[in-house]
Image 1 (cartoon, rainbow, N blue to C red):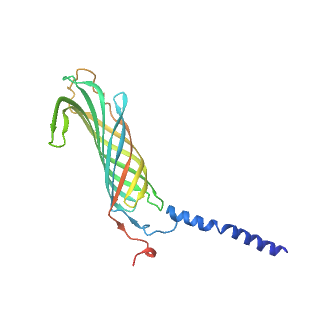
Image 2: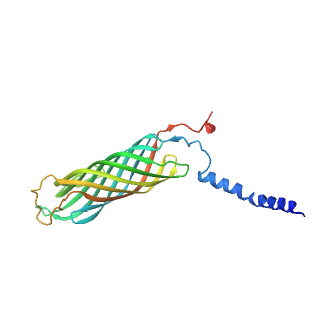
Image 3: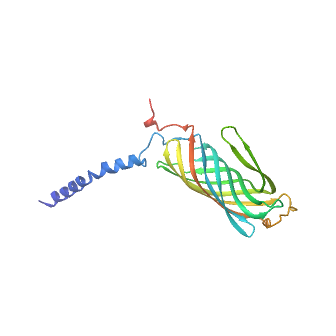
Length: 248
C-alpha cells in the first residue's frame, strides 16, 4: 500500500468511526432543543406571570431579619427580549415589640415595583433574565387584638382581628435577575430570583411608644435582599414562526 492509499484509508476509517456518533449527537441535540431553527424560534409569549415563595432579608435598625412570604409578578412582553413588569412582594415576621394590650407586634413588609426586564430567550429550556425596578415599600407593625371572628356554615373560617400600630412608607428601587427552566409550553419553574432592594422608609407617627421593645431607628437608606423561587406562566403569543417551519 503506497502513501496515497494509506491517506485514503485513514480518512475512510475516521469517517466510518464517526458514523454512529453523528446520528446520536443529532438526536440528543433535537431532544434537548438546543440546535437548529425551531418553529418557535421567532415566537414568544404575549405576557408572563409568576407566583412563588419569597425570603426577604431586611435591614431592621441595627440588626437584620429574615422574613418569609410570597411574591407575584405579571408582565407584558413589549418585544421578544423586553418585558414590562409589575412586581409585588409580601413578607412577615414577629418582633419583640409588646403593645399596650400585651400582644406582640408583627412587622409585615410589602414591595410594589415596576420596570423593564431583559429576558434572554434562546433555543434551550433555560431563560436567564435581569431587571431594574422602582416603586414603593411599606413596613406595617400589626398587633392582634385578641378578638377572634368566625364565619361560615359548612366550613368554619376563623381569624384574629388586628390593627396597625405604626407604618413606615418610602421609595424603593431594586436590581436583580434570575433563571427559569421551561417544563411545558405554558409553564416554567423559576429556579432562583435574587434582588437587591434599597428602601428609604419614614415612619408615619413618631409618637407611638410600645410597652416593651422599640421600633427600629431609621437612618437614610435601608439595604435589603430578596430571594424567590416558584412557578411562572406564559399566555398568548406574539411574533411568527420561522418561514421554513410555517404551517400551511
